[in-house]
Length: 186
Image (tube, rainbow, N blue to C red; front, side, top):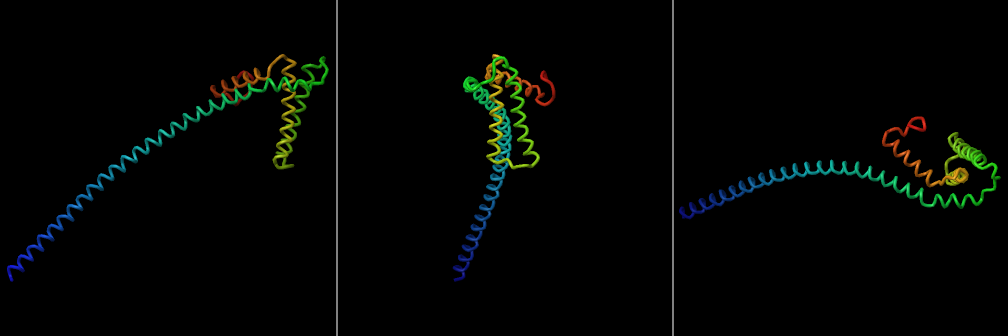
């Protein structure tokens, strides 16, 4: 009986020792896995920062490409249809030939004044800029456009050529950093 108790005690000690060793092995394994996970997290954080930098670089690059694309779209939109507008708008011109250039130039100033007057009243607080007011200002801008078309025609110029040249000038000024400032030749 004592031998049986001794065997049971020895077996219990061996089982407990094995269990403790297994727990210790598991603990060591967990610590090892934790170190691996920490290294992976550091690696991911590094890769994340690199990707963030690439994203920032791409955004800057795409913004520049987006600006270039917008410029090209504007050029295409300006060239498409503006000469047709000029040709069709001139069909409604009723001023005497002897006042060519002078009449549309003076009327252009008047129409631009009407646009400015409506905007002035908005700035002064006479009204809010709702859809009706925008449409009213848009109609005045249409008058400005009509007289630009008439004046260009009287000077034997096409609006698309004028618009194309204007975009070239603006792009050149932007590249040289002189969009702001005074003077035609800046």
